[in-house]
Image 1: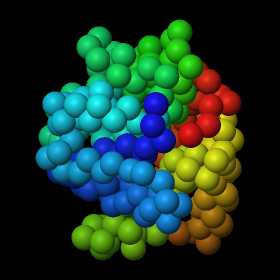
Image 2: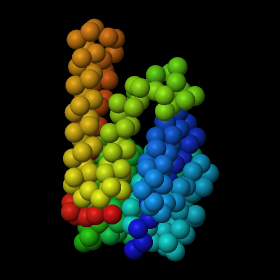
Image 3: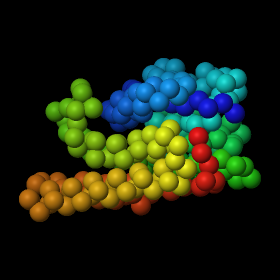
Image 4: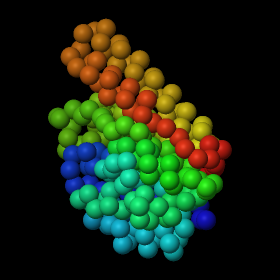
Length: 217
């Protein structure tokens, strides 16, 4: 298995566009660290091309962005890329972080059964708030950053040598720090603060780790 960071970045609606933009920060970090990477962006995030790359290049770390549910992870325009009932074998023995709704419920469990890999993902919907004035420049959106920078930390920590358990914990620690920031907003009576808190708490509570918690990239 090769030490390659594999990233999917579909970008066809507001949600996937934000995920794609924030995932680009992880790719930049990999470049700074001199780590090989493969960026599947936009229409390239299709089942045929993704499967071909994984089968040939055998990447160790997969960072999957997009929509999902209990049994699937999707790519461009909701095309199913990974399914617990189809090509789950492609995920076996790898380190996977899926920034997608609900995929840890079934797909993540099946991906790590009887294998040495690890799956970090969500048992609830992964959600975030945005500031609409920055919708054209997501990386300037400080509201979205409260949710997306802690999720980036999972992969950034892995790239820097952390175990899967440590990467998972560092991400959750960042979420706690951001919840403290939101509480200060509530103290100042800023509108919507408690709604923001609920969404971030759901991400915190919903983020789980399955499989080998001592795996390293």
